[in-house]
Length: 468
Image 1 (cartoon, rainbow, N blue to C red):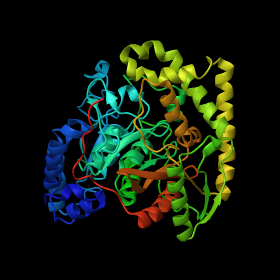
Image 2 (image 1 turned 90 degrees about the vertical axis):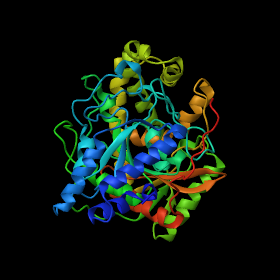
Image 3 (image 1 turned 45 degrees about the vertical axis):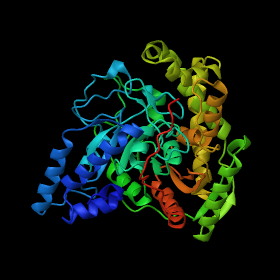
Image 4 (image 1 turned 120 degrees about the vertical axis):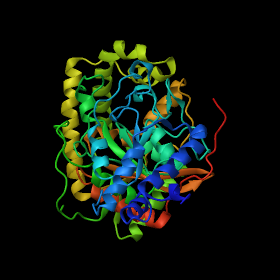
């Protein structure tokens, strides 16, 4: 049983539901794994005492002949900005260190209903504002268990590092421009950014509702080691909740779509690292072998999508910046201040024009998806690297490298990051993008890649690189 921490979520759930392995044993093995490797990786910020009681409850249900759900006994981590009842939702900063949540956020409720056991919070950057690193004032720096580079990516880096090192089978993060996909790329994992409205969320901070851009862009999504696990998690997460009026019902038969893929290796023609291009070419060949029709094609109006996203985000943040900035360090403020520096201050007309531009881009992407139900492209056009948060040039490199992530967030479509190989000790991968509410199409294509390239992890002996 000591190897349970290496099992997939699907294997854990099957063993628990069949009575072969008690949920309490699964939890204890993962808790021991946390004790062993978290001092090296620093991914789990707090362990939940009530998890043992949850495991006992699941075991009691099984003894009584009651199915506890498709994720029975599966240990999960939850990002520090997602509410777990009875625990502080700190966002990584001292200002919220005592902000104890009175109830679970909708995705946590849904995971529990499926039988999963939240075992702890995962680290994140201060208020999610740190580019591709995961460093918080309260909990310090999370490192990549692979060791080839130091950072696990951001901003759901704590949950990715926990899953990659076997401390949890699934991580619950969020993505507002690549924040589950980038850690998946850096840590050799698969992750899903759902469509806007597909997974119910509650992103209030201190009781205040988010403004428009923060309603439209951030989505909660799972990180896992296999596409099967990612699908199990998504099936549990998707659906409505009274806390989120945007969420739509989930289920029912969806129409078939053509097995056709648009390959977009260098979005907007700004350049792509040859090693990342090679991974995209390899993935394109694998999809062709699987029976997909593969063509080079770029989705429409990428530049407009990036501009609209940037205008909406920076216009809202700049107006709130005087109250946000005191909560941050110089380092954690750098990411947003760099964004401000790239754009002139937006007027109300600029902001309103951006909302119209976004709507038009969404319409054209929907038309593009009629011909190309899947887009294959990079999570980042750069091979994973350790960016210096104080270096504006490197910060821009990170931002522009993730431009396809930003565009997909702007138009609200789903995307799956999936690993495709390891080069010099560093996992590499791609992303598969679908039309709105067609996560099934992305996941199906991701399964084809996984069938050909395999899975990568968990890392048995996490490597701790020297401090910065």
